[in-house]
Image: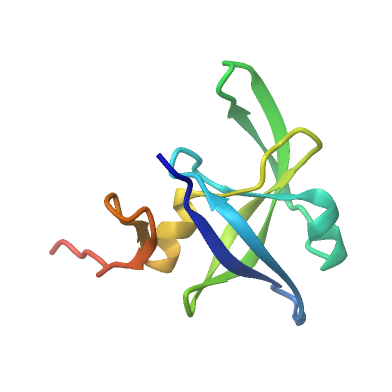
Amino acid sequence: MGHTYAKIRIYNLNDLSKTLDLNIIVDTGSTYTWIKRSKLNKIRIKPFSKRKFRIIKGEIIEREIGEAIIECMGEKATRIIVFAENGDMEVLGVDTLEGLGLEVDPITRQLRKVEMLIVY
């Protein structure tokens, strides 16, 4: 089974001229998008809080989080980003996918746009 990658652009919320382009692995098992701290520092994204995460080994780790605009396939949304440290992978998480109205096609393993669901 192959991996799914996404071309994304990350914007600093306070200065849209500061951007970061990445080709990043999509991880539908990760809630949030994780980007290396050093890359977020380059475009001056600042953390505003910390969260605890349980990793695959069962350990609990704590990481800082911030917010940024993420663009993929022509869609943009403000999302939470985790400041990944050394040893952490960079991944595009399901929160970002859902916020952008995207999903991974189970057959082709490619990203595709989806219709948004509303229940009323």
